[in-house]
Structure formats: C-alpha cells, structure tokens
Image (cartoon, rainbow, N blue to C red; front, side):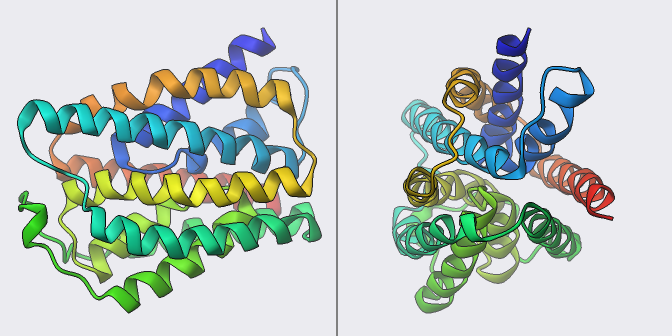
Length: 262
C-alpha cells in the first residue's frame, strides 16, 4: 500500500508539472506531508519531504521537457525559449545549490514558513492582470531583460533550494508578470529552468544527507509517467484555465501549509 501511494503521489505532482510548467513540489510537498500519516502509512519530516520533492521535481521536469520537445517536433512550433532558459537556469542553479547546502541548518518549522510565504507571494502575483500576451508568439521574436531575469532567478533558486522545490510555481508569475513572456512559452520554458534548478537542489540534498531512498525511488517512478500526460493535456487547454488552475492549487497549498504552521 505504501509503495502504491508513493507512486500515485509522484504521478499527481508530475502530471501538474507538465500541465502547468511547475516542478510539482508545490503539489507534492503538502501531499507527502499530510497524506501518509492521514492514511496511517507513516510520517515524513519536513527535511525528508523536501528531499523527496526535489528528486521528484528533477525527474518530472525532465520528463516534461521531453514531452514538449515531442509536441514541438509534431506541430513544427518551438515552445521553449532556450536563451531565457539558459540565463535564468544558470542563476537558479547557483542559487538552488547554495539553498540546498544551507537547508540542513534550518528547523522544520522555518522550512514550512518559508514555503508558505512563497505560496502566498505566488498567488498575489498570479492575481494581477496578465502582462504577458495570451496568444502564441514565435520564440525568436521574444526579448527579455537579462540582468533582471538572472537576478530574480537567483533569489528564487536560493529559497527553493532550502524548501526542496524547483521554484516553478513562483517562476511562472515572474516570467508572465515581470518579464512579459507569453503564457504557453512561459509554461514550457519554466520546466527547463526548473530542471536546471533541480540539479543544484539534488546535489545540495545529497551533500546534506537525510535522503529516504525507497520513498524517492517509488515517487520518481510515478513522476516519469505523469509529466508527459500533463503536457499533452495542457497543450489542448485554454491558457486562461491553465492560469486559474495554478492559482487555485497554490491557494489551497498556502492554506494547508499555514494551517499546519499556525
């Protein structure tokens, strides 16, 4: 029963990863924290949940990138902005590596509070009117402020490395509202950035120890299947509903995390 639960939780987080361009930790973190003890199947500490989440993010984002790549080849339309992914990915990698190394110094309550603050901030950003264009543009036509993009990605990387999240749930509002990237390209590109971020997070977690190997293995198995399915569903949905879904999920997560903290 425990094995099936871990696979299912990995699939759920990965599905939303491909659907919304997030790493999946925004979904998996509360699921891993609350569902196993609710079902009487054990309990994870916040550090263990963070470790499982970052490994799940790594594999789900990689799987999602492959899924979008296959769709781009089929439709002859590229969705991933490689230059943006390179600039933000490099900065977020450095930040997440530092955050992952520092995470062992934080108490569990502190990690939960940081996560809750990020979730609330993401909701606030997503509620502002969209500045990125809804319609799909050619990737080659899209420009961005490199220093601003890199700086914001570094900050997100540090905090997400501490929490064990890939940072996609806060990257998407930044890319849409601050950098003015169209929604579809934001979702696809953010997965590439999250993947790079997860590399640093995984290295940091391995260095810091406290790695529950079997739960990670079972969660990853579910993650590999969920992301391509989510990206396929997302490609057929109206971007308006994609954004509403993200706001709803982050809001629920924020309520759950803050209820446990308070």
